[in-house]
Image (cartoon, rainbow, N blue to C red; front, side, top):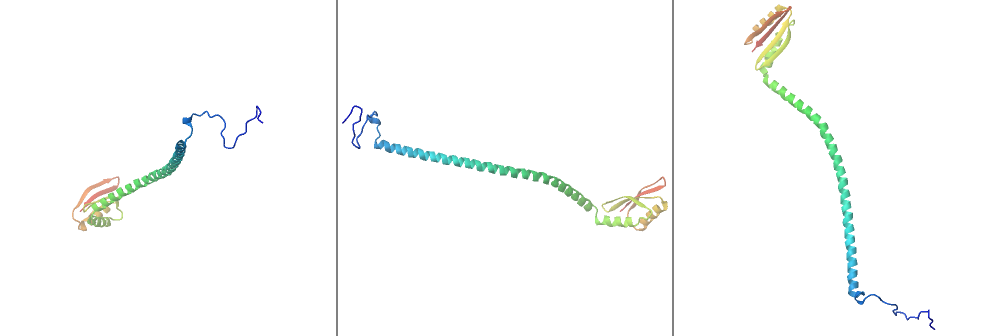
Length: 185
């Protein structure tokens, strides 16, 4: 028995209520398919966007760590170059001095060296050699002594040694010290 405030009983599957949605907006199978395709497509686009974003952040992280490693390597190489530049300067100095010694040695021939040895061998014991120079087969020798006869004996021994071209360039006496400069070829 229906009362004024009671609801009428409904059969299962029967529709009840008022539908205020216009007929052209009701969901049709075609619209349902389009909605499913759009939701799946938007989900796939969102997943692709997230994947691209993760790749971008990963690549950014990789590049930043690689940059830090390269900066460390660069600073180490700069310090190595700085340390080696000092050694390079020393090596250039040694090379230049070696080249200079090689030039000097090549200028003094074997003949000059032998002549120098012979002239020095003729110097008496009380005569001091104060300077010597060898150049192109000639020897210039400066000597001094307190004994004038020692200087005389040195010059006589040079003459007896049969050296060609003996020239006394200077012969001085000052304060009891006798000096001579001789050029021998």
